[in-house]
Length: 613
Ligand code: F6R
Image (tube, rainbow, N blue to C red):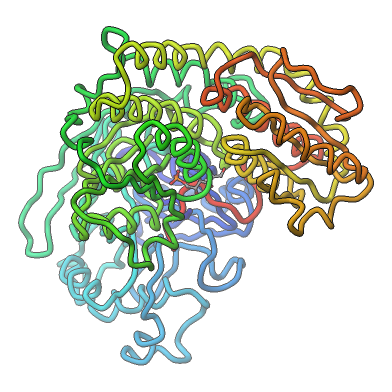
């Protein structure tokens, strides 16, 4: 969601801020803006635009002749107020220039309390927050911040600049930041002081950063940075180092990030699992996850959203039959408002690429309050979910820039399989011999995915038909159903083709009414245990004229007239077929969207990191 960058140093700020915003584009946004402080006059210059950062860049000449080494920039994903230039950030009110990620829930009450009726230019909650900061500002920025944030109910990451009250006590060229829930990272490096919603915007300058602690005021001076809590006590941050560089956040010759990330899957899965295999068995010793937390569990509960939740469904299918303990997969936004049955015998696994998804974070917090042991499977180091869970097992997918998650998903499944195998061993539900065989199979999945990626032409051809479709259905049983949900999500989010996923046997209980001549049905039939059943369901849609694209193991034989197109995966055990099948489904979505001329990496209305509920 909203991207934030702030800079104070020696370099010229306008171009630097725009470049930072370009790196944050992947988070999803609909308008953008920057505010810079003129070094000579101390006045502020704000430029904003609806649409892409490229359009903002085109307006940079408006700042020609201005020297500025201090400023803030923002990409906005609209929540309060429509998408228009006036609602774009940064906002100014009185002596305050500010930008914000999050939602101020009590904005209406604040309008009343601070007498703002008729004084606001925008429809945003952010402008109201700016007015509150302004109301408390009497020449001391930190004092104003401390007082203002007490007024806010909601989530926020603010970057604030103040117009000098009077020359004598001027707070020259400083940017202040504070956050509650919404993420912010910062760094002080040779080029100056930086703050951002994520490290991607800063990676050109440094691979070292720290996560801004909640309810602390960060002051970005010219090449200085201080952090203090609400009582003014200094805080020394702990710097983290990312193990990737700027090239990992670039397209590397591919047309889209999404294709690059699909292609990276064999490598990132290998990178994630190899260091966690010892003597042929899974080991979480380096992650400091003890076996004890896996013993005597009464239940396992997954909390996650979207694609990450679909990874949880695949994990359930793997672990439940072995462990014989109930595993529930929960949509985090629902879980957090239910009264879940959780106690100290529950292991709650939070799955998240970004580690910042607010619903997953809140579900995790809720389960902790109920006494569960929590384990996070997270891609972004130091993210909120990683920090707040009792244990964390990181996936090493590197930065995922395309909004549609691909590599993060398969790497989550591989990591969960490894964890599942460890849980089974800890509970003596798997012999060492069986576990070693399981791990050998897991080590094969990179090669299986690669075999699909090396031969994309049949998949590309299959999407020629889909390109023109308005609706599509995905069907499968067991793990193939979990994959169908993910395949359908991927197709709709980037190609805008209406797609639905059904458990193959469920279709005839209503939805088959929608299967008419030519309707595309992507039938996933890779699970040997239910293969013949799925085939019967495919016959049912075939008999009603569906255009069937069938995904199955290469050695399997079916009647020629069962499908229009057959796409195959290498022969593999049921639980491992998810990997090559996922690659096919990702490519189906990719080629359908690309053939429709759509912005594959940044689909409409979507945000990469969903930090509002
Ligand atoms: C879809 C997609 C989303 C995310 C979901 C959770 O392609 O990317 O459904 O999976 O928003 O995000 P994380 O994993 O960051 O918690």
